[in-house]
Length: 150
Image 1 (cartoon, rainbow, N blue to C red):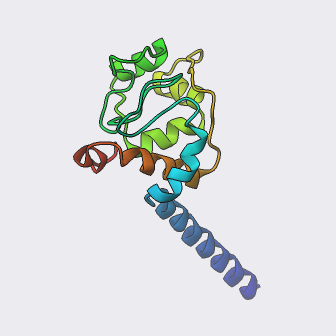
Image 2 (image 1 turned 180 degrees about the vertical axis):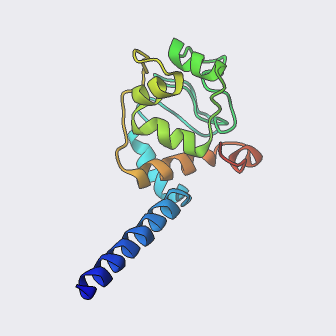
């Protein structure tokens, strides 16, 4: 009987410790170098760099620290503009959340079940999302890129 209680206690402790590691992993920064490789999937619509021009999606230079849907050189969907007007400012973590499922992100952000996003690409892999966000951040002002996340 006592062995069973010890086993349960150890199992419980193991669960608690593993949950702590999972939370610590959420704060892990992305790897911009790895993100450059993953960003190749984004290039069909988005450009970055000195000579970047808008395509099906906006240029992502300077996006970190910018209000969502606010670049006057691009015509955004109304829900993304609404999210920006409601206070959504792009950070690395917000970009990583957004690219997991853009439509669901907007629906949750706006509390609007019918919100839509023009972006259809989704990244299910958490590490890929973090890495792409870190790569995009390299094309933003370093002060904005290092601003604490909300």
